[in-house]
Image: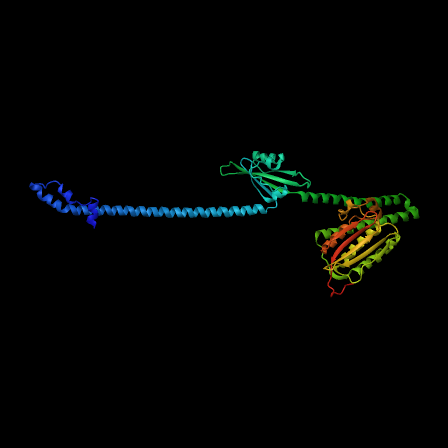
Length: 438
């Protein structure tokens, strides 16, 4: 078989080949030719085998090299795939972080066009459209943003501005811009972060109004007290009737200061959430009856009739001292601002669920529509002149709101101008098996 293979590929001398060979030499070289003729097939075979071996070895080496190359290629593909997975995972995490941010985030590319905007930014500007690929002017129509981004690039540092957004909400945002550079310090993009300051500005305005109101409320009685004292020192004390009248006035304004300070301390505690409620099972009618008795003389002075119409057996789960404060402020307001000869009614009922609804109604002048939304704000007064005349602090209804809310309930007002006002509140109902505390 091997001879056939070698012969087929002319690797073994055939008969035709041998017939065309040179004639055997004569003379002294005759024996060399014979010896060569005898050895040439074996030499040819040996050379052939060596050639085949070398060829096979080279083939094996090439095959091994190709196998190693394929293995290296597979490993490289595996590494590239793993790298792509890691990059995708990092991008997913980054996207989740950006999307969960409360602040608005805007990323621009090196050309100043929007590359990414998180959902918070869309909510801030009240827009859901896709702004990718647009410039800042095209996306927001705000030259201030464009100038901020350009300034951050030119100065190479973090820059910021406070910006009032267009619209009815009057939102105020703090915008900070910073540039991003690549490994060669070339501009890669710009990042803008939007922080909503609207709530902070509102709280700051409330704080300023609160300080101004407290200062005014403290200054007014103090100025009056100081004036009366100076008058007494100038000689009015020698007149018993005048000095007595002045001293009564001083006492009234000193009491007003005391009430104001007490209310300030109470509302500070309530707003801080540091008040621990002593919850008990209480009969709402009994709580209202105590308040009616405490204010009966003041109501009689103004010829106002107090009627406790709360049915017996309405059990609430509440802090007795705080509920007394709620009812006292509501009834006291109704007596102060009700018309002489009128009446104030206290009512209540069970709502059939887990709450007790109570109310205090008067037939006074009522509350204007524009004042109802602000009636529970600190220091808000519908009639400031009349309130000062009656000695109010402007904190009573705000205290009522915070106490009711601390019990989980709600308070609201209904009023028809000229026909009075009704302040309603809800409190959690106590279990019927609980015995009411006195």
